[in-house]
Image (tube, rainbow, N blue to C red; front, side):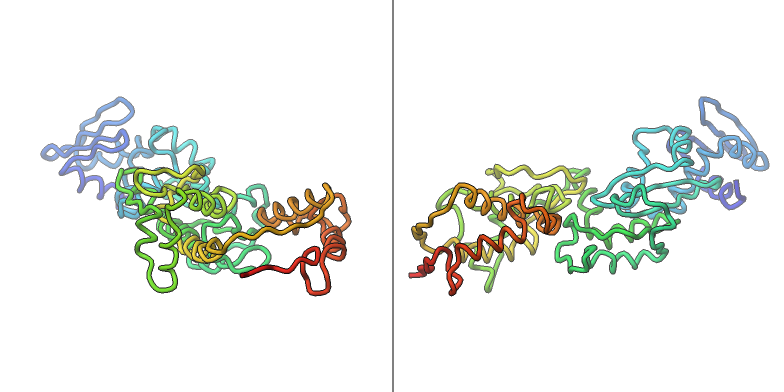
Length: 360
């Protein structure tokens, strides 16, 4: 151990140390040191040697009290990353020397430890778990995460940072504890804080009704789309936007405090405490669309054409259209099959089966 680490332990021992299996207390000119089921009493000159015998315990205490961020949510999150509530210090250090990996949304975080107890963190996309380091672009500045989070692999802007569309092909190597949490916050803002609030039983959830009651201006329209027909419309919103395939958060908000939605909230590590701006914007549009009076239209479709229209809607809704090969004409959402259907069923004005849309 370094002299600075020994000096820090000696100073803290005046008030007593009892942390992760290490106990140190100053008793006059002597120190009582206990770890691994043994207890030793030494003077100031011998303190360094005894701590060296329990180096994992001592450097572990030093990291968590002199190096790691002391803000409680970040401190707790870093402890969770290395499974401190599951493993003893010797078990944890053995695991950390090999690398302890956790998932956080689409992030893959690997924590390691050096001989001085200092933690370092490797951060990458889960989809790049098996990609050699040399094939990934390496970053060191946590602020680079802000740019990486803006667009997906196709260069499209990501309005929802927790959408499962995080780009691949990058890694952060050797991040400090503070740097790691900073990068995570850029990728997924406020998720660490909300995760911690939930663990402490302090997560403040704003449900659908109370969130919509706050909407003003053009978004105030959503308040008109409420419980006249039950909350089925909010189930549709949640199914469209707030499931695992669309967002890596776990939805905790419901219709109101007494009324749960029928749609599952997902399995994400971190909670969603209120309808986000993307949901609110979409709900405003759907409010306007659902206010229209239904009309009856008659079309003639073959069974295969009906199934093809269903396949097209499914493929668009699930974002699978780009994965359907042009040569695969057996897929209902194949581009050429869709073009054939349009050529057959649309008239020159673009009306399906020649039936005009009745907006009266």
